[in-house]
Amino acid sequence: MGKKRIVVKIGSSSLTNGRGEIDLAKLIDHVNALVLLRKEGHEVLLVSSGAVAAGFKELGYPSRPVTLKGKQAAAALGQSLLIKSYIEEFNQRNISVAQILLTRPDFSNQERYKNAFDTLSELLARGVMPIINENDTVSTEELKFGDNDMLSGLVSGLVHADELIILTDVNGIYDSNPATNPNANKYCSLTEIHDYMIEQAGGAGSSAGTGGMKSKLIAAKTALNLGVRIFIGHEKGSHKLLRILSGLGDGTYISREKQTSFPIKKQWISMHSHVSGQLYIDEGAEDAILWNGRSLLYSGIHHVVGSFREGDVVEVYGKNGKLGRGQVRYSSAFLEKIIQDHEKENPMAEVIHRDYWVAEALK
Ligand SMILES: Nc1ncnc2c1ncn2[C@@H]1O[C@H](COP(=O)(O)OP(=O)(O)O)[C@@H](O)[C@H]1O
Ligand SMILES: N[C@@H](CCC(=O)OP(=O)(O)O)C(=O)O
Image (tube, rainbow, N blue to C red):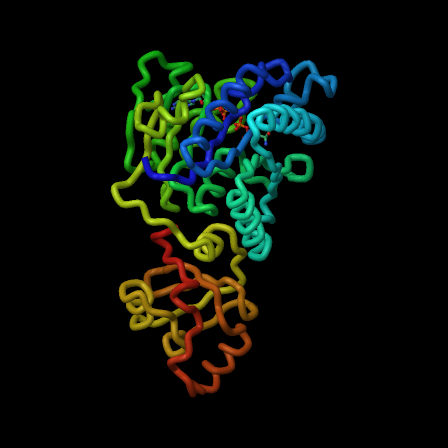
């Protein structure tokens, strides 16, 4: 088996006992499996949920808090308990652990996004086990990833992972929630995630989990589009991750015949950037950027909307609507002046280089 880069996501229900405490036996089972994966030479990153579910008892709540401050306080406490257990267990197996807590703005700010990539790459190069969670204590509802399924999908794209393994309390994706429908049928393998599957999927199966299968499917779709293969399911024992990797896991495998990974600058433009304006282009330019893999030149732009600066991201429209988005080399003021003055002195100059352009179909 070739050496792979693998992101493993573990849900709250697979780490805690439902009463606001860590289930150490479950945690140790995951640690053993992660260690075996590394022993085979694979690079492994862990996205671990469970902060809220591990912290609410000690905080004094009888059940999972529902208020924002309750969840954030439980997460602050539970994250410390979780990482303490991970450090103890991994250190006993001679592996160093690094905690990374991310927020949405770490992805929407291009510099922070690149920093996250560099830091994770450095940790992997030095053999450290990165353990990632959302920084729940400072993430307000509007600034959240949604849940850790999406975080794991985005992280797997960011690090160009070969595989994303989502471990949960159900053994795969069904055509309806198996917890409520005994006749639900399982998908053993998929090559695409269709919108109807997302619509059919239900919410969380336990009071510990948050997003349910719906959020796993949305995250899997994102990861698939970023060139990552995905497994969603349930397994036990120290060989579980190796078994999953060899194709024998109890769950659903999702992969395309041809997986193409997406450069991180394009991932950022496509999924995380803020749009500052619009460019309207003619048919020749549309053909050039959509079908011939060319950059967008001055000469193809007939209309500029919004106020943007060099380096901002804009949407590009053609005759039939939105074509995609890209990062511009010139400000709106500069482009407007050129169009107004018919001053197309250098019609060949690139406004959006093809390496900084993402077509709508690829998003
Ligand atoms: N179509 C479906 N197929 C499988 N599971 C589903 C489906 N719809 C809803 N679920 C529920 O999703 C749950 C897993 O999600 P969740 O509770 O958020 O777990 P985790 O804490 O691991 O993220 C399962 O326990 C199951 O009850
Ligand atoms: N960041 C939160 C996890 C949120 C979440 O997505 O939980 P889960 O559905 O169990 O993966 C926590 O650590 O409690």
